[in-house]
Length: 210
Image (cartoon, rainbow, N blue to C red):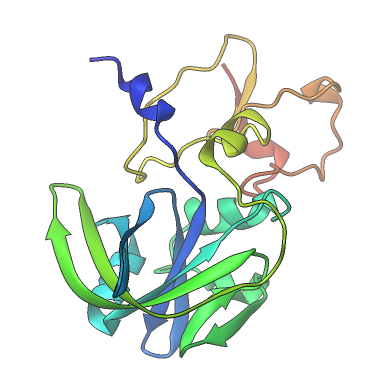
């Protein structure tokens, strides 16, 4: 089976959020879709290892913040390669409360949902949500997963449903946290010591030469 065939499917880039006893939590997701129009329902797939999965199940609600091509790549890294169990991701992320749910400000639209059903798989929970609120917050173009990979050179987190392990070319430097491969015009060794990964904000020291 050629797993790369799955990359031909259409995906977006989202921040899935909920509450943890009054504390906002969230994670990056790429597998979400509208299921029905009336009543409006959407689904999102969240890895069971993600702390946000437990919080959605406990809270019974979730929100999708739809990222745009203008959204900061650091948001994807912050929510995709760190855990809300250990870190307050919203301490560095502007957000607003919409329909009683946290919504990331650096997005082009949001959809708030009440969980009405779930589907269990070995690694993920698919949450089916009835839409309780939604709005478009900017005219920026929604980010596709293809854009994230080809333009931002972002990598797929191991908890994503579309994760495929990749091996970077020998001699290139790769982030040990998010897998981002440095392909800039300046030799990696000549980058300043305070340079950080454009995806997950890890320091230069987190990169390894393959």
